[in-house]
Every structure is written in structure tokens, then in C-alpha cells.
Amino acid sequence: MEVQKEAQRIMTLSVWKMYHSRMQRGGLRLHRSLQLSLVMRSARELYLSAKVEAQEPEVPLPPARSPDPCLHPPREAEAAAEVAPCDGEQPSPEPMDTQETPRAEETPARSAQRPAKVSRKRRSCSLSDGGDAALVPSKKARLEEEEEEERASSDVLDRLQPPPAQAEGAFPNLARVLQRRFSGLLNCSPAAPPTAPPACEAKPACRPADNMLNVLVRAVVAF
Amino acid sequence: MAGAGGGGCPAGGNDLQWCFSQVKGAVDEDVAEADVISTVEFSHSGDLLATGDKGGRVVIFQREQENKSRPHSRGEYNVYSTFQSHEPEFDYLKSLEIEEKINKIRWLPQQGAARFLLSTNDKTIKLWKISERDKRAEGYNLKDEDGRLRDPLRITALRVPILKPMDLMVEASPRRIFANAHTYHINSISVNSDHETYLSADDLRINLWHLEITDRSFNIVDIKPANMEELTEVITAAEFHPHQCNVLVYSSSKGTIRLCDMRSSALCDRHSKFFEEPEDPSSRSFFSEIISSVSDVKFSHSGRYMMTRDYLSVKVWDLNMESRPVETHQVHEYLRSKLCSLYENDCIFDKFECCWNGSDRMVERVQYFKL
Image (cartoon, rainbow over all chains, first blue to last red; front, side):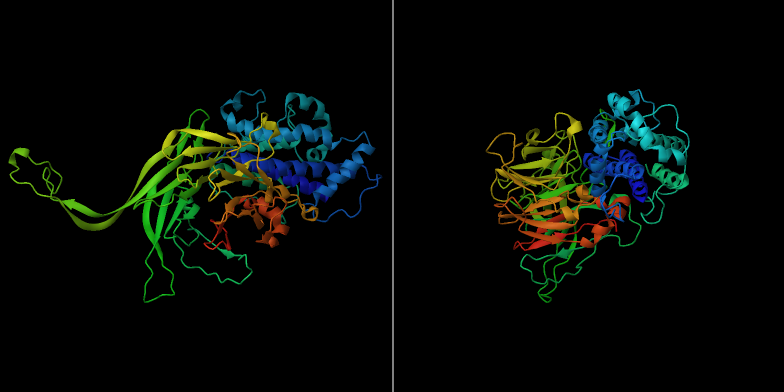
């Protein structure tokens, strides 16, 4: 469970960083976007594999889950790879991997080349020029994976408000929560300078919304 | 400078003593964003040090002549010239602002009294001429001392102008502007050993320029995939060989280095040599891919070795052996357990440089500018 929370936190952080990077002067940095998407992908694999393990306790798992999820996610991914073929009911990480990883890498590059066209996209996000592009998949992938993601993100739903009508992206509930937060922030006029996100050790995995709000407010001020 | 540090890892294993010689700029906490130094580069002789900052300015320091009465003290560096190299621009087609931050400075080999350097921001490279003027001509026939033209009909005698000394004035003038050749952000420039050409590298492409020609450049490396969804690595640094003008290397975000020979084909997409160290499975972590990215690559003066810098280590490679480096030095291994925190505060994305000293005993330069 802790592994899952940590992975979720990393994913949230990565999304925040992606959004933040788009607001910086000079435009999107391809290298930075690539690195963030790699971390995002690793976190997602870890999250999904931890979720699979949590839901299938009777399946024998490799011993000695690492106490530090930050440092040893590949073992979890390997466990998931072993577990998933054993149980066809559970969502396999591999198909989603091939669908989502290209998107995560594609959309930062795409938006680097076509930022002016983002507002014409059909998906009417408040983050239309923001960081949710990395979460937005192609149409085809959405239809296939949407129901899987609903299950995978059920934990997030429990803590957060009910989602709006449109379900988007690899992490639809996460994206919706962030959209709601951002849309409120973009109309704010706070005065505090930006600070880095809270330290790894100081906060629980799913932070209360206020802390995220403060961080995002400060980010908006800066840019 | 907001902050600077240095560390030494001599290749021979002898102990070196390091100390701060000088600190320039504001040492306190309140440093304006525009004053943050983004790049530094010594000239080939070491008498000039050029720094570029986020505000697009270049400040050149000159080392004072060493005092004979104090033979053991090193010459101090004082400000020699300051000029605004780049201004912020706006790309109207992409609706993107182009930062004026200086990404790299490279000195050209000295060929006369004047000095030349290349400075680049994300999109445009400029060639600057830095020249000294310490004499002024006086006694013109056609104009007065204050510059006003004299009436030719009133000139009854001719005189030869004479040169009189004046206070040293250092002038910086832009001689060439190399623009509109890069879609992505320029991360490297490197002057070739032929002293006529140089390369500029961005995330996906490397272009070859001639120093005299600004309206044309040749693309020599292009790693952009046909489908950007398949992008897996970007170019992080590139450099020409110090002696062989046809050889260049470029490093990638995956921790690999490719050596290319421009004689083999016009487009050097296929490398001649491929340097990669197999990853140690026991040290694999969540952020392995980020910290394995090579941030700088430098040839030794001899041209036999090259040095690469990633987040935690410095590696020395023999160009004749592609399978693994000949030396690996852990710079701050203690940070390996703190990668999560470093990711949160963005320090994991910091890019370090490295350089060789004059005798090719390795020197590592840590550039934490905002600490």
C-alpha cells in the first residue's frame, strides 16, 4: 500500500512538473519532458504492479518487498509481469504501457511544436495549454483502456471529489482533480513567491488538497 | 557568481589541494534571476575567463600579470569587458518566447590582437570580436579635435596625424549572427580544429557552420524519429576532436556516446564508434534513466581520451575501447540514496560540466549556480 501511495505521489509530482515546465520561459524543454515522462512511466508501472499485488494476495509473490519504493520499483514491475499472465481478469500493465508511454513522450514533443493549436482540440480542458497533454491519450486508446483505468484509479476516487462527465487520459481521475485545482488557480492573484514541493519525507502520499493548492498558486504567481 | 565550487580527481591518483581563489559577484542570498551565471569558459591560454548569465550578458575577466614580488600568488581576475550578447526574442509562429540566457560560450583560437568568441542562447549563435584600443589618433586635417569638419578652403598646411595613448578601452562587436537553424534548444557549440568551421547541437540535430557564412548550415546528425512517439533519447552534448577535423562525438540522454566521422557520409546518423557501459543491475533505481544521462563530454588535449559527466560520476574513456570506460570516479555517491528528494526539488535535472587541465590530468567542475 505504501508503495502504491509513493508511486501515486511521484505521478502527481511528475504531472505537476510537466505543467510547470510548460509555463516556463523558452517553452517546453524536450529533454526535461522526456525525463519526466520516463519517471511517470516508471511510477505508473510501480503503481499498477502494486495495485495488482494488493488485489491478488493469494498469488505467490517474490519475497522481500523493498522498504524504499523509490529505489526498487523494477522488482515490483517484474512481480507484476509474473502475476499478470496468471490472472487474466486483472489489467495487464503491458498493453497500457505500449499505449501510454508513446503518448507521454509524444505529447510533450507535439506541444512543443504546436502550442498554438492546443486550444482547438476537442477536449476542453482548463489546462488546454497546460500539463495535462501528457495524460491525454489518442482516441483509440481511450476506448480500450478507460474501464481499466477506472478500476486502477479507484483509490484516488475514494479520497477525491466525484469526477466530472468527461473521462480523459491515462489517469482520468487524477487529471480531473488537477484540472479542477488549476482552473481555480488561474483566476487567483496570490502574492507568494514559488517554492519547491514539500519534501519527500514530510508529507503523506496523498496530500490534502490545500498543500497542493498552495504550491500551485505559487507556481502560477511565478509565471 | 552566485556560487561556484570545484573538485579534483587527478588521473594519477596524487592528492591535490583545492582552494577558492576568488569569488566574484554577489555572495548574499538575494541574487537577481538575470545575474545567475549559466556558463563559464576559459580562453585557451587561460588569461581570459568568459561568463554568460541568464540575462543574456557576457562578462569577461582578465587575469592580471603575476606580481614578481609575490611569485606564489596566482594572478587575480578582474572585469575586462561586459556586453549584452543576446536579447529576449519572440517566435511569432510558435507563440514562444526565446530566452536570452547564454547556454554556451566557446573561444576561438587567437589569431591576432583581437579575441573572438562564440556565444549562444537557445536558438541563435553569435560571433563576437573583442578588441582593445589604447591609442587615439590626433591631428587630422579635415576635422577638428572635437570632430567637427573643417572648411577645406581654410586649410593652408598639412600635418600627419599622430597616435597618442589613451585609457584602455575594450570593445565588443558582433561580427556574425547564425540564426534560424535550430528547431529545438541549442545545448552545445564546438569550434573545429580547422579554425574555419564549428558545430551547434540541439536536442535532436547537429549542424555544421562555416564561421564566415551565416545564411547556411549543414545538418550532419539528425536523430529525430519519423514518429515523435518513438522518441527515446536526445542529444545532450557534442564536441569536435581536438586534432582530427572530421571526427566529432555526441552524448545522449541514455548515457551513450557516439563518435562520428564526417568522411564516411554527409549525414552522420550512423556512428563510427558507440561507447556505452552496461548498467549495473544492482544499482538500478527509479531514477536510473535520469541520472545516467550524460551532461557533458570533453576530449582530452591529446585526443586519445574523452571524459563524460553524468549526475553522479565522471568517466574517462579510451577512444579505442567502446565497451567500458577506463576510469570511473564517483563524485557524490552519497546522493544516490537521496534521488527522490532531488527529484522533488529539481536538483536531479542539474547539468554538470567537466574539463581537463593543461596536462590532461582530469579536473571536474561542479556548477551549482544557485546554492
